[in-house]
Image (cartoon, rainbow, N blue to C red; front, side, top):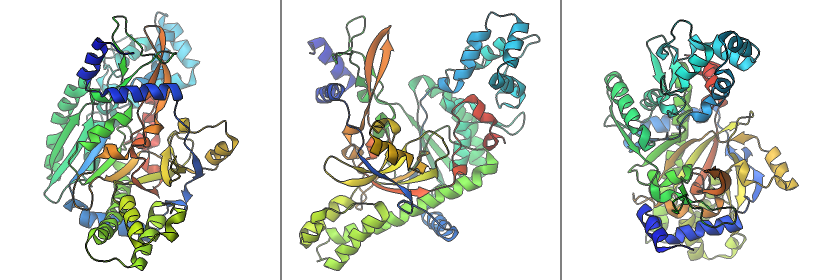
Length: 505
């Protein structure tokens, strides 16, 4: 299947031939749908907090969080092209028409009429060069094109998201730094942030960092350390044709494609941190909503620190030389059931203490993630479900709709009964009880990737995405879901979202 030249190309990318063969196998066999058994709901898989609970966990984090090495991790490599899909469509319709026709077309389109009617309110308005007599098409070119702001090709992190006044207009990157400064700083006064970016946009992020960091450091007294990384070439996946043979470029070389956000697991794995807060670059709010968002980040962090402390206490007992009483082992089993929804094997009741002890060590000695969940109000996002693996283990997982066989009436009914979705709001612990970093690649469920059809040079191909970062890539982590208010979730998926109340400063 592969020539010597192919093998050299694969080796140069740093990909193992075994991985390539496994990817081709998945193209041929497909991925089995997620075997969801029931949705996680409030009180049944999703932890619901009282005001007293929130206050206690917030205080746990405020008192103890700064003692840990915390990193704010933000995937920020994607271009904002889809955010401006409607503007691209309008430009295509308007370009070349006389100005009166353009005006009439806009007035007949409610969405675009609203956009142009509110244009002066947008945070990027002051950056436009609006000469006298400029047409609507000319304005759209100013926003999207290289002769203007190039917003159609820039990453969301470098776009102006919030407008406080004509001078104070902030990018989402700047807002994330300001927010992180309120809960991620260490006792030594250091704030660590890490963004994954594309090589083409690194200069832009570094320039923006140089602009925004000094005044934030001056205002907070923190030393802000921002690092960047790229999606690694060895995480690319091979493309195939419709017959599942390797897809070749016009020059005969193999075509590789980015492996999706699941490829960022290696970037995450490379960070030297105790605690990581993860969310998307476009989920951020202006100052007036920050207090609530920061408060719930601290709540999630406090829950993580509490369960982490309990797990480490148990693991040290289990790994010590002293005998652990059966009643103590049973209490550990109950803790795993109650806190993490771990289904206990049927044979557990017949195990003697040594077997139970080994099962507990294996089950508890894993990375931990605490995930915020919001009530489903029609926003897209993976849902929280109990999922049965091929080995029969039932665990809490974040499952995308594309992983579920919606043609199966039973599974479709379970999806309909789900009440919450994942806004990508996670806090994670990636060290074991001895202080050693976990090898995160050991906890991936490789059977949870995605296959889609794409095109290249007018030819159809099949592309494979690696297990999603907070889906299959974290499938074998200890998982705890916590209900958080929908107000903590304010994504910007389209340019029009910038005019939603939660983004008006």
